[in-house]
Length: 398
Image (cartoon, rainbow, N blue to C red; front, side):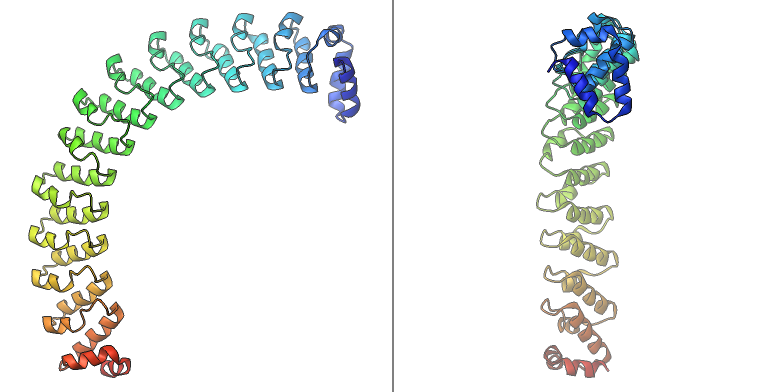
């Protein structure tokens, strides 16, 4: 079916009066008729419309043939046609290429039409290997006055648009080529690049930057290190605590910045502690609690909730002997609290030992504690009976 026959067929099949009217207006155009007769392209109705609009725009047949190809989508045709109306043919030919998608074509067109870039500038990125987001970053560089030499520092398809942006920001902030080379590496993520760039902009030395410019290091950890290096942390410590998590590293470095000794930091700088456990030990040290008391709960077997409870007991002036009554990894925090209440009520150790049993839940412990408090003559034998006889327990509580 020829294009003329296809046009007639489409007119019969299409119920849109507006579309039919558009085509009817073209049929009377001798130029359009001649094009339909001579073109071998297998064009859709939408593509034919773009060609018709080219004649309406007054484009020459030579220019229309630039985009009158069935390999171009209607959107690509429209962008090329728009370019031919507003730009020189030489400029249009930079993006009138089926290897470019519509977004890439739009970026190149905008570089000329909206940003008034020069041909030599556009040629830097008018290549199919750059996606449209990469193109936009390069355009931004030229728009902000960067030279071709500066733009070439990041105008590489090996960098994604976010990585390009970090290098662009480094150039804009006045970093030297040597400094930019420390992070202009595509094996680094854009987030990692950012932390290195910010360190350089803050005046960190090359040795300080090198301590965390590691593609295998999480960018969040890089940020922590960068922050503490600015506060005076010795960069040699970065390697020492390399294998600690982000949260663990922050607590350790916070210790150094707060003037803790190596011995104090060693109490909690342990891989086996979770960050939350480390925090409870750290808070004890920062709170100037005696080390021998801190060591009571600085054990991996305690959950951070248990650690916090014991730490608060120490703050409330519990003696080591009193702590020993509740600092048991088998006690839940609720069970520990029952013992704490008994201590506050002046119970003797022997009374507390009558119900300080991990096998009793906190509710049972509370019941027995109240029974002892209201029946001070309760014997150990009676308490044992309480454990086995709920009715007797209730009677005593009354």
